[in-house]
Length: 286
Image (tube, rainbow, N blue to C red; front, side):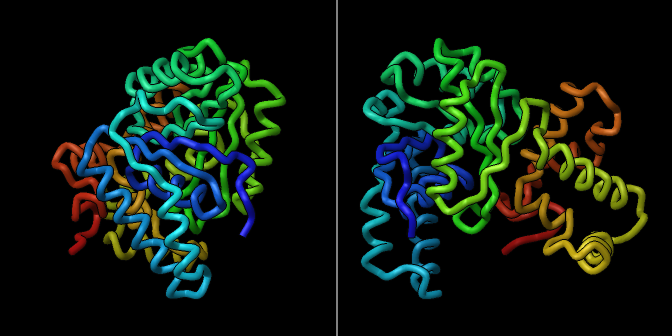
């Protein structure tokens, strides 16, 4: 397994994406500070990492000693202020501009000038995020895919002021994690969600209008389009609240009604039906 080009990394946010990103860096030899203000969420994140590594061991991809070493390289903490001596930060907090702005302002103040600040945002402008710092040339998007330890793609998004040097370092880092970087410009949704979310949204409209059942819609896309997962099941995996947030960014940022979130999606989110993480979305989960 390759070795990360960054030896000291911090990941802010221990949720679905954050814990997967932390695991990936740790598997590739980096020492990782995993930060989350919620102690329960932090413990859940570490437990998720341990479970994921155990599956790698069961498949024969990792040895038990390698898995144990990876866990040992992850230092969980609730204190964002404790992040000081790192070369790279990956922010993976909720998809809310104001929350990300607060995180980036604090990181910019306390980290050394050479540190690169990245965001795992799936749709929010990197330029907007970078404007909260005094180092916009060292702010860039690293959009990993879920589940992070398995998925190969990472979108690398340059903001308006992101330097070529920063971009080159992050591209090299992605490759050292044995993933495939694809550079994208800083437009709402980048490539992945600009293409994916309208498909998911249209599937929700089909369900709302009674065009087919949830199973029928997903089966058409799996068997007819050779997708590994149907759009409604995929929305449940991503999180319906996350899908709604991304569609809001696309709708507001591009001003086109084709990105208007389906009313049924809004209703499900309002009811707390967020997908797998809440136990119920378009499908029910034990």
